[in-house]
Amino acid sequence: MPTTKITIVGSGIAGLATAVSLHAAGFDRVTVYEADPAVRSLGLGLNILPNAVRELAELGLLDELRHQAVRTRELAMYNPHGDLVWREDRGTHAGYSWPQLSISRSRLVAVLAAEARRRLGDDAVVTDARLVGLDHGPDRPRGVFTDRHGATRTVETDVLLCADGIRSTARSLLYPDEGPPLTNGTTLYRGTAWADEFLTGDSMAVLGDDRRRLVLYPIERDAEKRRALVNWVAAFPEGDGDGGTHRRPMGAADSREVILRQFGRWSPPGTDLTSLLKDTEDIQRYPMTDRDPVPRWTFGNVTLVGDAAHAMYPAGSNGATQAVIDARVLAWHLAAHPDVGEALRAYEAERRPQMTELQASARSMGPERVITLAHQRAPGGFDDVRDVFGEEELAQISHDFAVTGRFDQEWVNTRPSLTVSPSRAPVARPDSRSAE
Image (tube, rainbow, N blue to C red; front, side, top):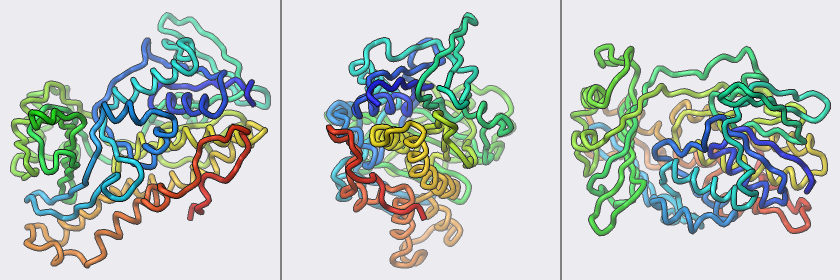
């Protein structure tokens, strides 16, 4: 296995985390192929839950990430009137042994790319190489890549790991009749801007009714000035009161107008939404999409990783988190099993049932479901949330979602490590909890 040649498609979080994890597990013939001319450090904010932060810590990256992220202290959910529906501690404040991190996607990708190159060499990340074909037949798999000038190369490998995102070319070649990602009719508007700190300064706030969501959390702080770079997301049904603007290109001014039409009378805690939007230079807009679960990820010595395998709605901070977990579980199984095909099937057997369940939970908006229920039961607001929910109901919703995603506190703190032992022998199955 140390001589195994491993090819990864995609240099996003899933692909780079897989490369670093494989090196940590003893593999040094690992190459990442990226379609763009450079590794893209694009994207806005994201959250990494403690189960994935544990994995990054075991890869030796936590100290670097701590300097570039905000350690999220709490999650607070409100109705549009500013009434608190549910609040819970997060990360170490909730008893986890590792923090929850809010960070710019660009910074996370940069850290992973630097670590991959440090471990595997600068030539380990090949850019301007777009996957256009693959062969997963009985012999060694082959990937066909093309550059921007049309030149092609065929790469024969022992393992082909496809981490090329929600619009995965690899997945489209394995499932040619699937079609594009699915949308639920909701449009996301996203941006970042510097603003005064709100709540604890390390809080994530989510406001909503039964159709709309407004999410705010800091991804960088200036403690001296008590200011934060706030990542915000506004989500509502496409075409809902936007005057038809969703059908044409929109500039930042158009986006601000549409967002304020939806959320201008809402009461986000400690935040002037109008000023926040005014100070946002670039507002991104795109549909909320996911993928239906597929019956197989693995075909011979080819498998899917991250969003290519299980793209889901952005509920509960699971996109980047589950990509990192995929990477570590996959590396563990490749190190633990003498046969590549057996290793990939074991990885899929462990991860696919969990992710199928989590995808379904994300479609019901995961822990944010409490906001929908609060609106349905008390659309005009409330004085005491106990008049709306039973004593244990809110906590149970949050706990159930955490158990589904395998990031409940007890499991994260106590499960066996995914770090490969020096002997590279399987010391314990990394996830002994059944995927019910």
